[in-house]
Length: 111
Image 1: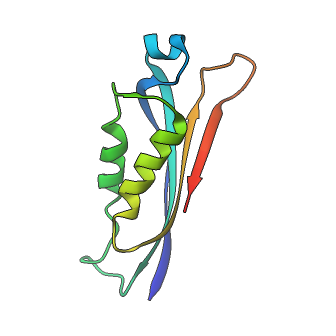
Image 2: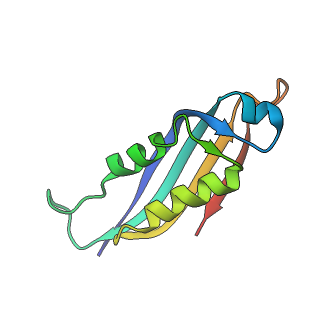
Image 3: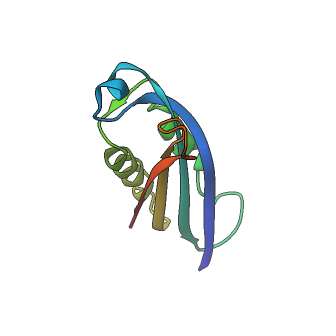
């Protein structure tokens, strides 16, 4: 069995994310990252992790409305965990434009 970590860093989406009125009224940038531990029997053209599917799933949140980062990261994590080869995953979300004096506010979901 071979183990790998797939890393997707700061895929940018624009969505309505938050419980405050200003977050409900305007879309905001959200940066999503994932670290995905996988195990495969062999390394060849037929055995790989489809990170395109993960990126497309994250992109599907563009323009959508989600109440909290906890809900967003949990939904993405649930999708990733559905792959047979996944052993563990961490999903990060960050809102970089919430505070002018802070680089970003984020959440990490793992399991």
